[in-house]
Length: 432
Image (tube, rainbow, N blue to C red; front, side):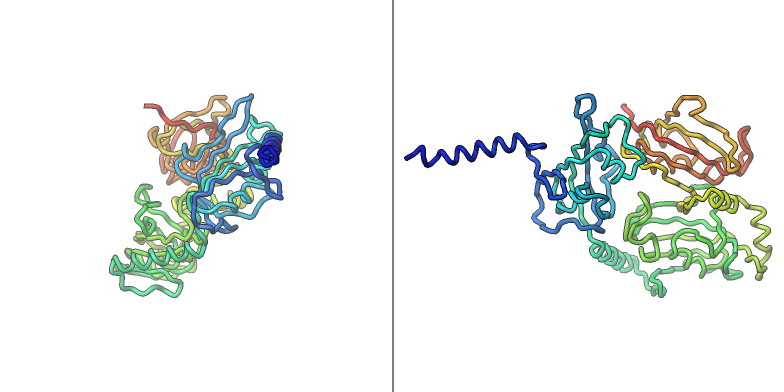
């Protein structure tokens, strides 16, 4: 009697054991789309990530190389977790499908095909050479934060409310929603389309994190009013100012960098605070009051026009960063982020806008190695490198104000725009 009761359970246990051992990836479940997954639920919140939500994840992935499980990337060794708006799946059973199965706080392991991950998901031209096309990656993900666009908008509005209240700001916002708090009234002509505007400005997040300051560049910035300069909000505010004027300008994300932010510089739904001083102002091309026609200043300072022509001639669509640097990513790196204090190894080719080559590590067949932030480089070069990850490739177009300014060298004349094609070969921590 006793054996007849327990025998079926023993058979069932044996069958389950055999089934688990015969599974392609023991311990993993499989979705209908073919994704193998193992989720460790921690969060009590049942809300799962959705397409369009902003997710912050820590991730690590590895694969078998020469018979050894090799970690290819670990975000904990980088400067920060990875944050992005969750896109639609690139194919059935991809990583994004796996993330949509998770809630904030959860962790998970996924089995992902190498070619599919690097080419379809990461949009790389090809997988890393050390990774075999038939190999799979063990992808570990920890979902640190999960924010819907609705929640992020509400957080921004709440932060702006308390900033206005804490700083005793009494001016009303403009129709577009920006706040212009003038501290010094300017004098002279009003700014009109085509005016050459020279200004100093700094910009920070509403929490006080400084993003950029022209005072660190050694010279005021300039642009022709009516052309793209920075955010729509600051462009609107500048249009209300005159020469010598100073103002603080609060720009909500709707008039700033919007729902996606600006790369690694400005997060999504971020209110910005500008401090602006109009250093000089020259009349527009029609010669409206106030001095020299703007055409004369184009001749005196043609660099921005030349850069625009170079971009158009080479069919490059790019906007300058607040500093004036043009950063054009050609291939996204998947390794460690380049940050100050790291040992950087690169190959580069430096040319002028006319195509003349002035330096090349490739011609010497010797990569260039330096400590970012310690070994003094030109500002535009350092800023561009800090946007890259190991394995990445980028084109940097560096205006002279971020390069050698009016300094003439044996390689190029004064006020030269420099172009660097860079491949970031390696990023390493510096041992004490």
